[in-house]
Length: 323
Ligand code: GH3
Ligand code: MG
Ligand code: MG
Image (cartoon, rainbow, N blue to C red; front, side):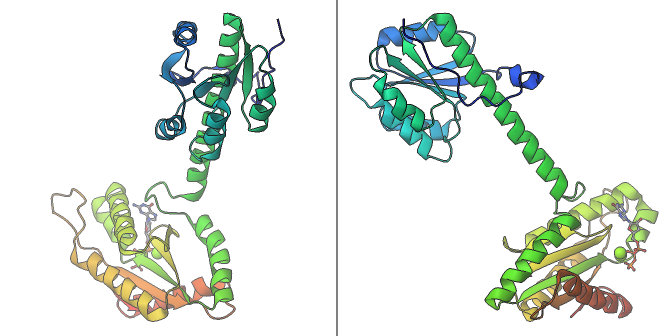
């Protein structure tokens, strides 16, 4: 018998326990047209995962884009359809680009393999293949997929933790200042105005003292929601400190920013905050300082200008917007 392929694309650390686990209920798609082969594969994969069969054609990639499979097994020697084309389509769509592909070729048709490997398929078997070997290759790909999914998930969780504030779900100060740097440069290069507002809840210490810290947290959350609802997708809202927030608004002249800030201030003052207190919803007000970036302003200068305006808003009696 001819030697079969080596396992490609394996980058997991084999000592790492999560690198050696199979996905729960793996979803496997098998593309072949021979009944007899499909039956054998179904039997071999019993207990390994849920197997879906398709006979080929362009709908394979479409199906795989809708449902995320953990492994796709494609026969390269089908009569009515082009297995290589199926693989190339799978590799061309964003949603299916990283799904492991195991190809099967019949003995004597190994010429397809080079093309398939160049397209980025992960492993192959030459038929007739020993059942145990087939299973081992399938499992290796499934473990690799699970490992990659875990790494990806961990990456997202880490990113989330590093960039967002846990109480409000808004971005944190670090994320804001990092992005303000690039946004400012873009705005200055294009000659567009970039405005910021700093919002500070009035007498917030009194909310904590009167209703407790948990009630204070509820106010912070609701306050953050109201900010988020009043800004555009391109704007960036962050929790800057305890009860201080910053909104960065690209392409926004000072008078627009003023209007947005005042609309928000008014909504906060008029719609009382439900903190589950027996006294009923409570009145909260906010003071806002607004500034627009000058020609060569740095993030620190811009924030400082907004902060000075905020100070003036507090001095002026709170519940107001100052430019
Ligand atoms: P001012 O109108 O001058 O802004 O008065 P203030 O009471 O809002 O200002 P001050 O800065 O004196 O108090 C802010 C308070 O915010 C103090 C702190 O206990 C509270 N705080 C900061 N972070 C949190 C938080 O995460 N949760 C809660 N519940 N309170 C917080
Ligand atoms: Mg404060
Ligand atoms: Mg305050």
